[in-house]
Image (tube, rainbow, N blue to C red; front, side, top):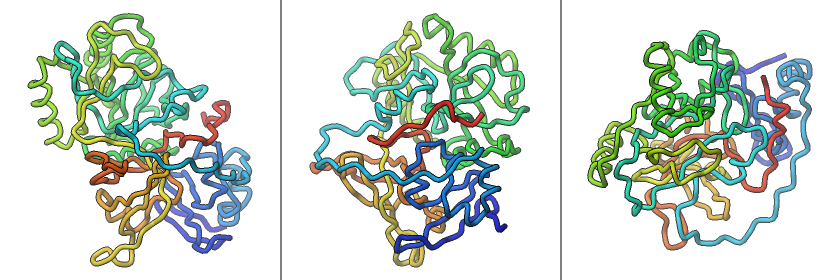
Length: 370
């Protein structure tokens, strides 16, 4: 049977006006058809009749563990659009409540008024949040990241909270590597940067010291401790934010001194950024013009409240040649909201694989690939 090489896509005619696009990314196969998009299985275990037609029933059954195509769900009735008074949160409450997901501490955005003097300050890493349970890496939705044995060798046999990070301005590259299932040498581009020890019942300072001792002294080749410094006040905060953003960083994270680790969103952890970020769903590929004629010009995106807008900046040449599929949830950055609640100066960041769109079913954690 024919197959797709890593990174290759093919079009296949279906019931829609436009052909569906089948793609292989690191052994994870996807299709733009509704039957594939609307399944509640983990992405790596989804299949559909188009993938089975291309690769054969036996190959798809072996790849997915016997998963079968699921009938596309009827979309829920759309609520009337409203104008949000504040920037939309990038993580939904649904994502925080997924059964089987690790008990992660999640941040609020700084309100600009809270005095952060004396708080612990660090760079906000633009990578993939990962929970090391002592045996494997788990995403915030409970899916396993298939790191090679040499990558995890000698990591402490205790829970660690951190980020799989490929460097500044490398978010898409990082995502493409950590979602692979072949445990390839591409993981050599990734580092596990640790910033907390969730199982240690102690103030943040003690947990931070534990991470530093475990990872600095061990000198692990692919894991490191994330350094922090004490914030000396608003002026110091602004200086550090400008320095990090000038280097291509995303922003800052601030931890309240003496705080304990708690599952869920907490005001003991605050994020500080010049630009906001949020999630939206792709509803249309808008054709390009000029130098982008014949390929993607912009993505038409939709917020959970129904607000639609186009994002044309932030797209790479590869994104324009092979756009992310319709229905995919993506992260975008923007400066502010207009009076009508439309993000101003939106810029595409990348596809979000650990986000549950409001109103959609969550996966069964018992079916997570191990």
